[in-house]
Image 1 (cartoon, rainbow, N blue to C red):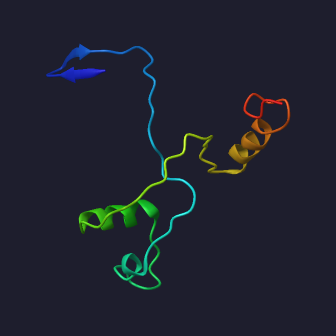
Image 2 (tube, helix red, strand yellow):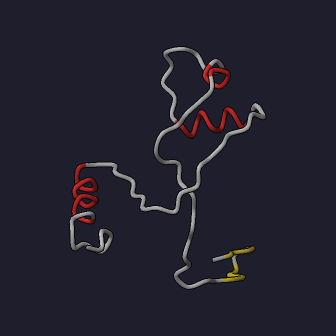
Length: 92
């Protein structure tokens, strides 16, 4: 929905979104690693943001495969069930 000055200007019912997510393994050059203090805990979004702010290139591998954020044991069990033979995701 687009709202401008308190009025709805545009609306799409149940929009389908397609966003890329950061998932998997991150690989960095020694140059990139040297920009951060040794022993300091950093998360991937912070590292990527810092590298981009410094004007350094950050590559990506695009995958259109299955992805789900496994944030707790309940979600892990859901993923396991989705990939059991006969499930919708597994397909056999």
